[in-house]
Image 1 (cartoon, helix red, strand yellow):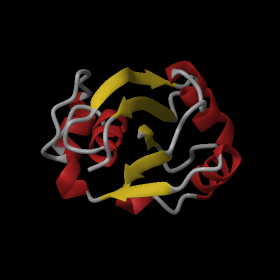
Image 2: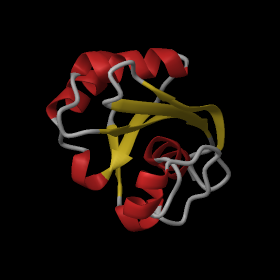
Image 3: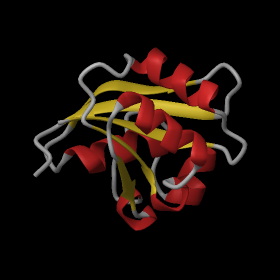
Amino acid sequence: MKVAGFGFRKDVTLTSLREALLAAGGPEGLTAIATVSDKADAEPLIQLARECGVPIKAVPANVLAGVDTLTQSEFVAEKFGTGSVAEAAALAAAGPRARLIATRVVSQDRRATAAIAEGDGA
């Protein structure tokens, strides 16, 4: 299972999400897209999932809080209890033995971050 995790601002665009995904390695082989639950219904994310032909996995914020990430954002750590929403969402959705294959990257407009994890989904 290969999952792209996303963190993004309220004003994110499909272009921002696409750009972040491409910078993280692209959509090839993805089985799902993941983000924090309260953003899983964002229209640009739904559009990206549709383009990639994969489902969106909504990860509860309390699950993200327990995930160690390779990159750290002070703002994200204070708000979510993890260093990167993108990395934590990808890891959580890919399963308990998941590993990052692409650490957090940021879109040029700084509205979106993406990371990719691979795991067994169990």
